[in-house]
Amino acid sequence: MRLFNQFPLIFSPSPCWNAYQEEGSQSLDQSRFDQALAEILFGAVNPFGKLPITMEKHAQDNLASDTFPTDLNATTINYSEGLFVGYRGYEKNHIQPQYPFGYGLSYTTFRYSDLDVDPVVLRQDDQNEGLIRVSFRVTNTEDRAGAETAQLYVAPVNRQ
Image (cartoon, rainbow, N blue to C red; front, side, top):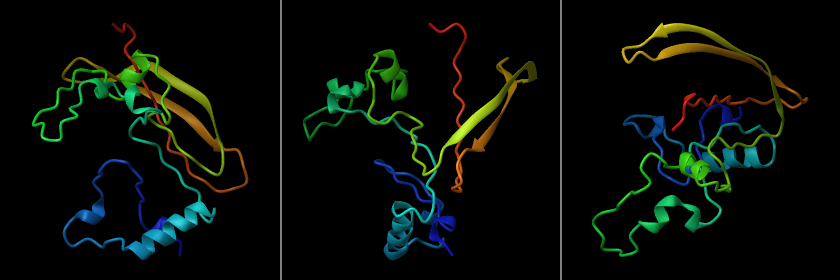
């Protein structure tokens, strides 16, 4: 049995929560992790997933780099980018990141088709924002088995 099917592997440059850190959960020991990683690298299984962060090409591309303290004894950090954190900041400042939010790798390719955005609001929430139905078809276009993590990005019509 392939280990990739038994354990969700998260490769991230920053800390992430996972179910195996809960008390009493089965843990993924290093040898099993190594085997699962080898199965991905040698093509025994097809990786899928998307980055939950944006990675810049150069440290100075990070909008927080101007205000991030260089003093190792600093006790405060001033995050001056406001709402323009991560991909929003790169987009606003026309910076092409090394790996954008949502970037992922696969040994196969997928085609998206039959996009349908139902303009009828399904339900109004307490803040008077409507929920809208969006559907589409995802097709694996190659012979190799694979899975895709579909992502949908939305933005306000009247951006300021």
